[in-house]
Amino acid sequence: MHELSIAHSLVEIAEEAAAKAGVARVTVVHLRLGTLSGVVRDALLFGFDVASAGTRLEGARLEIEEVPLQVYCETCDTVVALPDVRYFRCPQCGAACRRIVTGQEIELAALEYEDDTPEATAS
Image (cartoon, rainbow, N blue to C red):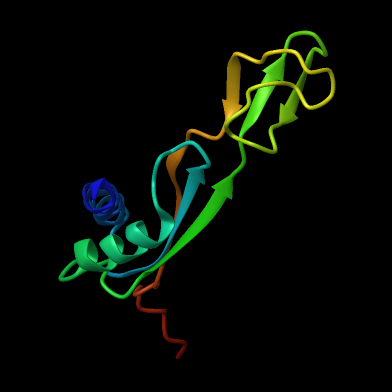
């Protein structure tokens, strides 16, 4: 289950970013996850809960944006989405497509956090 090691890495990166920003608690972690990433979504969600225990991310929600597989078709000179990851052929012209444009991502996109900054009081 490599998802647990990915979850640990996500927590480590988010912890570092939160510390630099002076954030006490992260509430949401936004992740972009490509179709070809090889990551099982449910296993990653479980791993994230385990990895975030005892950190400023404990209890945070992991929001996963699934990134579709898109390739560049040289024949059509365009980027096309592939409906089936087993066949790297342009759905418009049938040409073989070699260049993957999106779909391999495992990207920490954003963090949401609680603002613990004390507000100024008016006299």
